[in-house]
Image 1 (cartoon, rainbow, N blue to C red):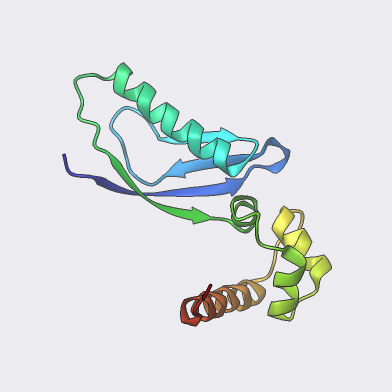
Image 2: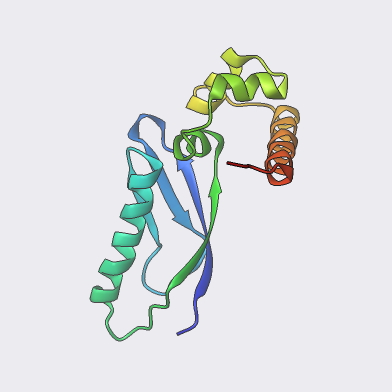
Length: 134
């Protein structure tokens, strides 16, 4: 069976945790999930998809190929191995402000957001260009 390509966006939902929303217009439901962490929200989203397979057995449910989109707090929740303070310093930003952005307690300006996106692209390029030896 052919895979269905969808985009699922994960956003911070205040003190409630994180929510997933899918861009694909399923006929009988809106695919989504919620959890106290990004991983829990993802699991809930896929559990709901499985429940819908049981609820609507006459429909075809292809395997999903997901493009994940994260808001800033969700990104740092999911990639929790990134050190927020060191990342801020790498980007030339205030670690204190950056921690607020990562926690979702402050919103950044569009200009700051573009600076962050460019810095992450630079980080990714540096990692791709490096060689690890043993």
